[in-house]
Image (cartoon, rainbow over the protein chains, first blue to last red):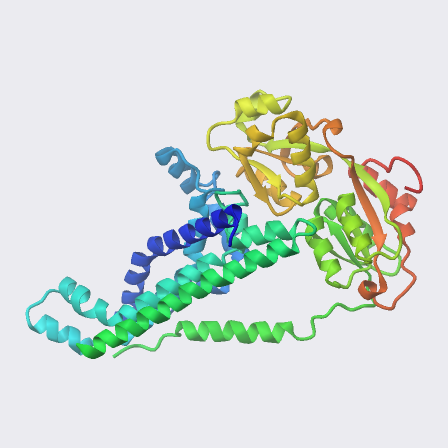
Length: 229
Length: 262
């Protein structure tokens, strides 16, 4: 069984990852829809830009986050003036780092599943007098659901594994920013911690694997249901 | 109806191919001397490695703890310069050293603040004053637990009875140079680094920690076992104790070892 300290790390990691997915879901849905359904000048550039966090070294992403959202930056100072909290070196920083790094995975999964939705079904709904919003919510989204869930789980697991950007932008604070990779890293800095490292590694694998199995179960259930209807 | 745009799959494939291409043939050339050194030694060791006998030596810098792990796992290095005894002894017990480690320099810990710090108008002279003048939400940057600079600082705070107060503000960073960067950028209101680090960045030094509150900060050097060094011989630890090395260490602000033959 996980110890109290290990539970703290796991719970914090799960909270951060869930918040990161929630934060990025709507923007990702919007961008994925634009990329899947619209053609415009500079679309390849926009897509490349969205993919950047996937191909950039996370340390660089962390450095950029610290530079543009840090305490000495304009956004960082405005945020502090508004809320009285700093972004850098906080749980919020962990969430932002995880959200940015997992964003491309989310957008890409949603985009691909939206591409798989037959636009004629949407046309039928529109021709029957339903508005674009109704059509999107009642026709497009349910059809794209497996992709949405897949993207959410992928970015959730990516958030669980986030290290490079987090180390730079959020630092290593016990109970606030020390999620699984940072906890493993901290243990690696202490001599004779091999057993503790291995325990946490196994727990981390268990958590990520559960998320993936959950996605498989959801997808299977969705298939079954849509097969029946 | 859709214009063809490069999909995310192509980006990923390209990245994978590039990684594979660059990973080939990247093993360290064993004829060149490789030095692993604690992050706080970055400037002095780079300088000494450049003019070392037998051409420039290559260096790898990082937290002593991380480097020691790599050495234990057989990283190809010739010398290790550690920022504390603890990790050097761990390596010695693991049989990674070819000779007993020797103290090459000593250091002190200081508290630093950003050059444009609000603290600058009325400099705090000790920990209690610093804690009084911090604003809510301020952070004190420390090297992580297990990293020598982080261990010395925490030991000192515990012994002076300030740890529980400092803990509220503390943010751990991966090595002492990351602390220096965070403070220089103004991201942390204060930080604890070595005296010698404070001299290489645009920061103000507030006060030094009382050396009596922590173990002596000693840098040790040792030649590594043949599994790490490869077959090439003739790399002598004495270079680190030559008059030239002494002068470079001293110019950077390091104190000399206490006694000979330590």
